[in-house]
Image 1: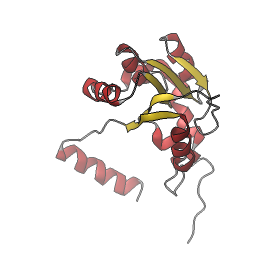
Image 2: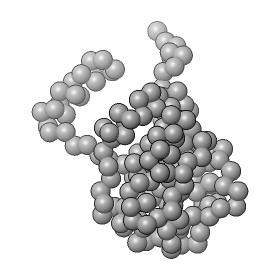
Image 3: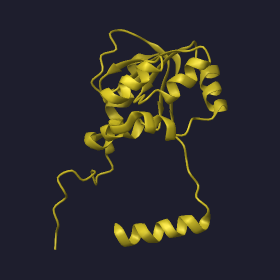
Image 4: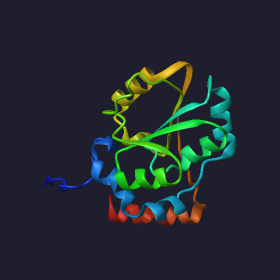
Length: 170
């Protein structure tokens, strides 16, 4: 028997960018989010900066500014874009310039960047519109760097989680 999706259920077509209410739910407690979210490896951030023509960085879905602050620590000038006002305000309080908007609808106003980065956020962006926007704002030789943390649970934990997922959400 067919079932109807819940009104606020995540999309089933592998397009999380359509689930704005999920993407914007992290701002409920921006301070806790910032404290709990893992930082990115310094070597990764250093490599992105080294491979970029200069040090102008656009942080897509910057959230509380975790990645942005890491790029700033290496001397980069960073602009963040994020649709959640609570996350953006937290980032601003930590010294990150943020424009409140989704990346797809953001107006770059002719600005160009040496790197467009998205730490743990690119899956919230429409892939076609996001790629086109990144290409539009990158300087020649610029880099699009999409990255995130991967958690590799110990086998016994992974099996337990898999068993629960199969039971709860087959």
